[in-house]
Image (cartoon, rainbow, N blue to C red):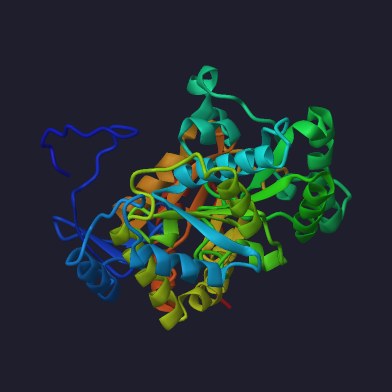
Length: 452
């Protein structure tokens, strides 16, 4: 660790070494220590680090131009990337607006939805219903739909709080319902909220198809997805999928929406879309919606770096790399392997209460009692401790607190989509060692394998 004075500040004083370089699924600090990137940063580095073909295409664009303002020029990279994205979308989603990150993508999606409603003579619609817990970004507009008191609390007087319904945490339910019935139960909460708010005031429903950091790779029962889409159509409400984390192959499909055959009205993407090679995100919408905005005088929105040619060149190179090497297919195959290995940990550690996710968006949750899913004592700060134990051993994982952000400990294990089975073995070896140390620190049971 370096002791030199830093003028940077982020979220905490947590010390970290200087990064020297990255290669594939590995990162190296300046002292030469190697870390396996078990979380792809913040679920960003989908194709791994320092891919030479992507870097070469970025360099070729740098040699031509690094910036061209969209009101002055069209650029080939932005046009080509938009065409590629449209070709990968469900039918009807064919208009693309580029941004620099996830919060910008969510803000853009909501403003697009609102302005479209105004063009349709539905100016009374402005409420965006989302879920609790959820995470949709750190800017003021996105905080309004983020269901996380930890992140929103201090800023609550500064933004409009949007209506919330419960996230479909069916894995916590202790009832006699079937999985399908639970999915429908949670979906019908949307109908109840629409009626309570007044259908003429509700603009959209915003959801993560597979949960991100706030719920730890939460997957709803299959019945949830279709019923939610039906309810939105019934009330004329726009369905917005926040695929900032799930998009660009993370779940084993280009969009997580594809797992359930859902076509949202608007999709927001970022993170793995640029894969860490450039700040990049995208909002994709129906063509008729965009034409309505343009007919009314244009979309009243924009960012200086929207459609930046260097960022778009990077994004296009990332998608080409994914296609050329079947990286999304690998995410599906290795996701099955990793999920099976994580689930296997439950035999050794009774304090692992749940393993969930799709593709390589996976998480496990620690509990005091698996039967009741009672949380660990929050003063243990397990979400921090286990991450540090793994980090010391050369594995990077990502944690949050599941229950309102203040207690409940889950850990995301989401390596780059290029991961191999032997590298999954490396992750599991280090993670097991870290879990053993965590158990020893808190006198938790570990069930040793019994040899035949």
